[in-house]
Length: 107
Length: 120
Image 1 (cartoon, rainbow over the protein chains, first blue to last red):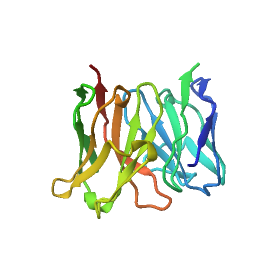
Image 2: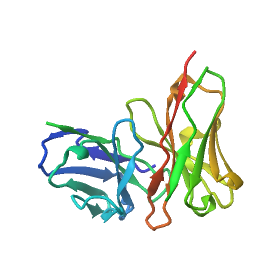
Image 3: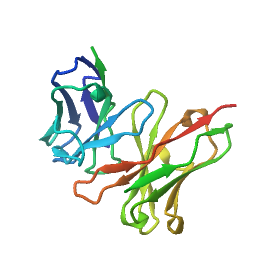
Image 4: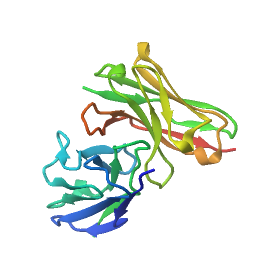
C-alpha cells in the first residue's frame, strides 16, 4: 500500500497568515494527489485534485503543487473559515490512502 | 444539484448488524463509482473500498474484508453499506462519497456521514 505522510500534524496561525502543509507519498504517484478540508462534525470537502487543480467554488487562496512523492497545499491570507483539518489522499491506486491529517488552529 | 443523503445514526450492540444507506440525487448513480470512508472518533479518514455502480462489483480494502458488504439498488438510486457481527471498534462515522469521472479522480461529493455506535 502507498503510505501518505503529512506534516505538520498540527499548526497554529493567525488570520491573514500564509501557511503551507506538506504531504509525502511512500512511492511516486505522479500527480494523483487530492486535498480535502474537514470542519468539525462535517463531511470532508474536496479542495484540490490532480495535485494543483482547484475544485470549482473553492477560493483561489488555496493552491497545490508537487508531483512524484512531494506535495504542498498553500493557503494565503488565512480567513476564519479556513481553520479546519486538511487531508491529502492518493488516487493512483487502491487502497486510496489518506494522510493522517493536519489540524490548522487559530493562534 | 448533486446530493448524497445518508441514513441516520445507529446504536447497536456487539454482534448485531447495521445497514447504512446513501441516496443520491442530481445524477445517475450508475455513472460514478461509489466509495466508502470510515472515520473513528477523533481519528483520520480511512478508505474502505468502492463499488462499481455499473456492474455492482465491490472492492474492499484489506481491513474491511469479511464483515463489510457494499451493495446497490439502482432503481432507488441508493448505495448501501452493511456491517455484520459489529464490534465496539466499528464505532465511527461512515461516509459515502462519489468518485469523479475526471482523471486523475477524486472524491467530489460526500454524504453527510452516518454515526454508528456499537456498545453493550
